[in-house]
Image (cartoon, helix red, strand yellow):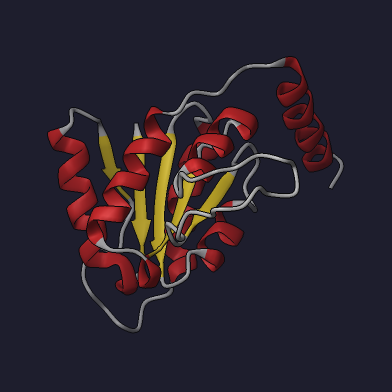
Length: 166
């Protein structure tokens, strides 16, 4: 199951992504907004989606907002939710990063957050993405697997222990 949520800022994009996911054969539940109301507040809708992912951590959530930052902050308040933000497919770097890796794939962060963090929610910054970039980002996120490597699982387990001790 994929849970979708946004406020008015991402309403039109949510509808497009919802249709694309349905066309691709995914089961989708829309958690709102259900109309384009400029007075609504994103935490109401994002919390509804994050609560469902929290209860079903093997499901996914796709949330949207202006920058995607507040939406990710809201989603990450819920146990077993690991929400990553994506707000631009930046111009590929031509130089090597601090780890010695040369990356020319602007969507690599989506693959890494799934592979290393088993992220189960994605927050899109709609003011920084085109419709096509957003749909591509969702597709990459959903199709990228968690590696299951012991070191990554160990880190996720440590996050869970932090949540339990709050």
